[in-house]
Image (cartoon, rainbow, N blue to C red; front, side, top):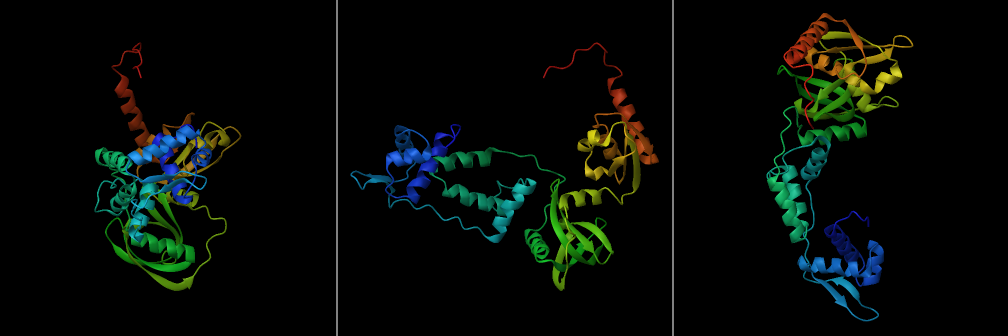
Length: 328
């Protein structure tokens, strides 16, 4: 046991050891926990204070065992609850406090299985926290997500009933390569036979699907995250070309793949080319580059960058140049 672990955590570990080895002695318990025998007895005392009946038997065949009064409820999750917990971890769901949701229901089961003093603290945190909702999050249907993950793992083609951002519904026959979570949005990376090309579809816009008989072989050495980010950087309304005044190996870690393709222009500079539907957002991303750069095109991103620069300059025009920086 690490020295940073709390007494409660050590007590729960002691409970696990007693349950796994009925009759375990105080010295063996101390050895397993990595503490003194006196400390091990103290953790047994914490369990008893929490209402857990830990019995001790004296003599050469004695030791600690859990009494017959302990009845921890089994943790039996439905498929929806289990997937809900996984999805909550992956994209930061904020509905853990809602007992009617899959995540809230599963979390409630976990809390009810804890010893009373520990459960009371966990429940207090659960009720008191007020996380800010992610307005950009798009949560897909867990059943749809499960079916797409299964089709991907089994290399089965599927027919999607898909609703576009404009509200148009159509059927799409696709080979589902991978399910990828990016910035709280769930995407299906696939080859679309309907469009005859690589595509990334938002899973929250899938209204239904059917497994087809055809199978497929995914691309060799597929990197789903990198492929998705590269795909999302192309095909938008406005083109972008930027010359960055630094070598590729210096700049690469500062440029996200969703900004476009980064390649060397010469030994001292590199070129970033991509597309965007939101020039203002793209210009803001460029301001984070730690080196000088020049925007060559297109006209929309150049105009937006100029407007952004004027706004930043206007924000400091009336600020005295000798003003002290704000304290942290």
